[in-house]
Length: 391
Ligand code: GLU
Image 1 (cartoon, rainbow, N blue to C red):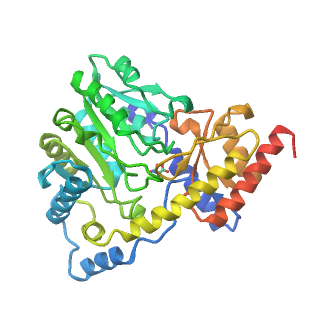
Image 2 (cartoon, protein in one colour):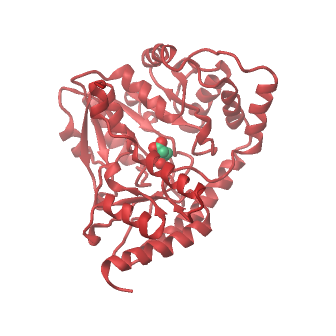
Image 3 (cartoon, rainbow, N blue to C red):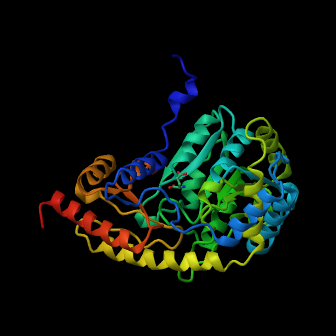
């Protein structure tokens, strides 16, 4: 069979593939410790579930507007104004089938063959693939621990060419957990404005920041950067709503209209009653978000301590999201070999850094319970020791 060329250019999502494998092994009764997909282990808060049930009971089961329920678009605009200082109205918002789909809509709306999109590595697995699917060229800029995995303004400037259309920034970051400071964002914003390109700010982890870290949206830093900013986000991580598939894109009306046309011919509206759950998430008490954040903060400390106590492994302390990204450079094996052998020998699932453009690293999601963290870290230590020959 001859499939479309675009299929040859994309690599299947390793995060989803490994997560599915871990879940299947678990279902078969294998004692797996999974640190694979970033999926909170908490149930969706009750009041959100109740709102969706009530929506079902009251007949909110029909087609809705492709751009989303008007009430949800207005609530998202309100949230962006009050939480993020971004002056968006409902017309600047499209509700999408998860945060991932909001980025996909954006790529289709903005990127065409010949366009370059700058992506700092380590990057989230789907960014380069989405750019390729839209016919664009991903331009990867590598960062490392020394710069806290952050792109500098001069690196950004050097990567810009006349073909550059878009720069992707993700803070708090998946996979590194790093958070850009307001000053760092302001310096990057200056480069974006000077070169008159767009920036998409993936803020899906904005509620998950630790210690005294604050999340700031790059789009709020000046009127000039606001005009060039598109925000991508969703409900999955902050409200433990991964399976609901509700996200959004916020930005200039022209882009939102284009994304709405695309959605009108692809998915139509996001599941209507799921959108009513999302409305409850925004309008209800935010205590549930704080409860989950505090649990993640405790797990972050535990996993950081465990990993740095394992000879041969080390990781920087992340200040956001729920990932750590240790270096495995000292083990001398590739990240795929490392993760395959670890799953095979110790039944621990995590994601090889190659998925994120960082082959000498591995990613662990600590959105899992403390017992799994304790057991999994013992197994990880046994694995690393067996590789280095010490006991
Ligand atoms: N975003 C999560 C992760 O990176 C979920 C899986 C996915 O969509 O890639 O693990």
